Length: 214
Image (cartoon, rainbow, N blue to C red; front, side, top):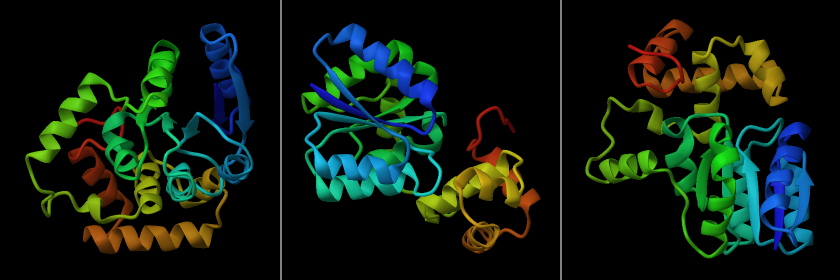
């Protein structure tokens, strides 16, 4: 079995590689530090599963996921993220991911998730499965204006709501301050809000940011 791990933190890659090596003695594990590196390796070699971090510098994991599914439609991609399921899981599954897992649960669930997706299944937690079932029962209404945002705009919204400045967000995403300011302007326009304070209140009300409550 060949597994590609794409994450910009070496300690995360090493930890995941050790978990997989302990569970699958004959596994071959590749590493990528950026979305661009991951795409190059995916086009260059055959893989059975890709473990993809959603938040990497430069091109985002969500962008990479869409490109992977375009170039390798049958390749299962297990998305790994620091973000709780309620923030990104629905988006990545709609974009073609075979599963979504938080880094917090990776140690306990990675092997099970790999086994699930490499045989054609989908990996989601029980809580996420319940949420997806409920989402099917209702349409997105005007109260959920964040559903109108692009993937990158949504990511910037979460970082603003977490208290990061435009400069800090630019550094984190390896983008220019001007680009982040443009994203912020689009977010405000699409959500009909006027300021960062409004965005933070919106995120709290819709439980978009971990640790924030109404």
